[in-house]
Image 1 (tube, rainbow, N blue to C red):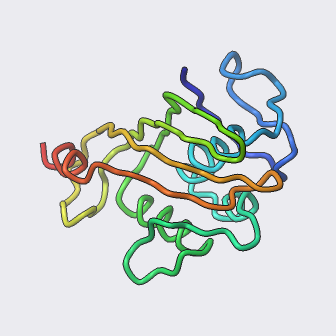
Image 2 (image 1 turned 45 degrees about the horizontal axis):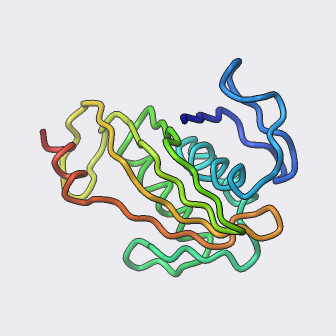
Image 3 (image 1 turned 180 degrees about the vertical axis):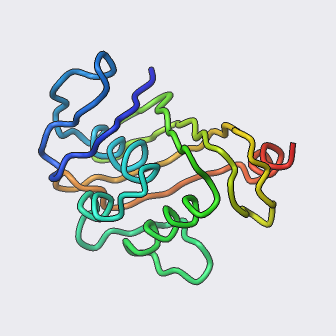
Length: 160
């Protein structure tokens, strides 16, 4: 199953807009919808204000860039790091599994490599890599985040 969201709602309970045919006109505010709004919409869009509105007070990012604390600023820093290196970002949700307040997202991240990333000079080529995100949702907002990226595959894709 693939879900691409083009716009994030102003509040976590608001409906999600999507391209015609991609989603129903109204998507309820479920844990899956919250996780998808953050990782398939706000992060690749670079919309910092939208991203911050989707994060719960006390948000904790467990996989942070060196020198970052684990709060909202860590996720925002990751978003900016990606935007410095990649244009035309797109995140496709391949699988989403929800259990209680936890959501596992298996996503395909694709972009144009336009800046330095992991020490690799811009290749100006498109690439796609897969990632796994685990998100805990509380009160309609993302409260915790973990991510697993295959660094070897990333470097393979960027250096090819």
